[in-house]
Length: 127
Image (cartoon, rainbow, N blue to C red; front, top):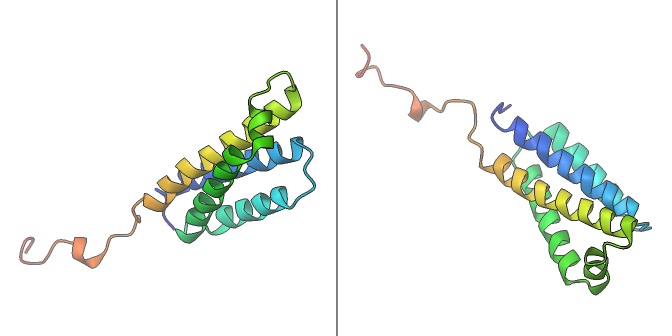
């Protein structure tokens, strides 16, 4: 397990949790909060070991960011701060996705803590 990757994985899970809370706050009946919750649990459990799950969180979050910015209903909610619940939930969801993308990229890019044989010094260098 990579200890270097763990903080980024924790922040990725927090971003997914914030996105799920933002989705619930907007009153949607869809499967969004369940998707983000299940993905968050999967990233928390296996994310430090497997780079695939934080990478999947990055892809899913990026798709939802694009969808939120393209959808006229979502952009109307994000540009109307007088609707406190809708605006706050939308901002929370969008910021959660942004955090999940950035931290997920860091989790995927983090080097493994294990040293590979090519990284070890040879006997000729250290007799």
